[in-house]
Length: 475
RNA sequence: GAGAGAGUAGCACAAUGGCAGUGCACUAGACUGUGGAUCUAGCUGUUGCGGGUUCAAGUCCCGUCUCUCUCCCCA
Image (cartoon, rainbow, N blue to C red):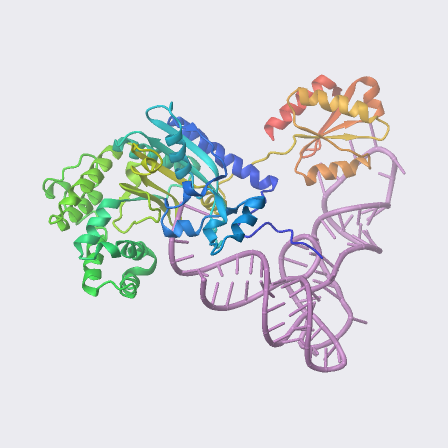
């Protein structure tokens, strides 16, 4: 009876070649994040269920991986009459990195006033896997806590943009919306507050299922046709005017927003015009305008694009929300937003915060599809080969001298024909061979061979090491 | 959660209901101190699992597990 050897659905084993790419990508992200002044944080894989529940919305709660009680606590729980699912578990695997951060902030007294942390770790969701969708995957989060300044919102967007630029993935946009604005739009179309969530879910699909699709969706969810139409009219951004017939910025009176692109300024004006009757909309509109103005002086500026249909599933967002999109992938490559209430759920006093998260595996997928990883190697530089007349001790002595000299050296453990040893070197993509036989051992020398060019020479050990170093550098 | 497809050697794939095969990979050999090419020989199987139909099942039927894709949702 064979037990299955494949990893559980939605998880993967990372072989050395995978890890070369993953480590490389992680290094770039880490470097960019640190250049923005973010410092690293890691938190446990699992949290108290009470920490996780109720933060993400119903959908999120459903997708939590729960850990059963251990030992007799489980047995006792099962004895209880009317025992339910939630009585059987008290811990869960983290669903994202934002809620654990909020917990740490609430739990730690002496953090800097503005805590800027990055965190690159796996998260788990009990989802059905698909392309670019896993049950275990990495997120690369940056967050800034302690300020409501929209400068912080722009900084997190900028850091994310810089990562994509650095990697050569430039065809992205950052869709931008505002949670409160969204609420106002729904309210303005005459949809009841109870149906707000439902409406959000439907309009979020606009770019996937189209106008008619959303129309059907809204109807199916019991939203009056007239209200649905009003909502669609409100959120639908008119097609981009071409440069020729686009009115000059100054023509939209009162909207002078320095550095903001005419297209974004026009969309802001359109939304403002539609919401004059809703006083609550003034705040979010001002914030979006200010955010775009600040972003004008940042790497994020050219990538931001207002999209009133952007909803985002997570429950904790309160202000601006973002999502990275690219034609290279049908879902999002990352997302984020402001959550000024989340930390307060753990601690009496509310602390404002904003963050952004890059989906590591999706970015990796895009880079692989586009061949954006150059040649990456993590294997040894040199295969140390040996004739049977040289002792293993002598071989290890010489090999360790090469290692001391800074080379990555694998020693062939057996002594078949030397050609076999060379063939093995090729098969593991090692270009350089060191060869030790009785002849070399007696003279304190070492033969070295470049398997790519066929060049071979016998040198004193120290010189051999130096020459191997040269060869290793030039690849 | 809904729908569709696929599971045969380490990998990629064949096999009208009639002996389970091909290629790559792997092992050995063709100058016992020199690899890549070529040639020769060899190894590799509970055809995902369980049942059923049949003289006979990889093939047809039922169940089950796993994987892939689409939808939903997301990163």
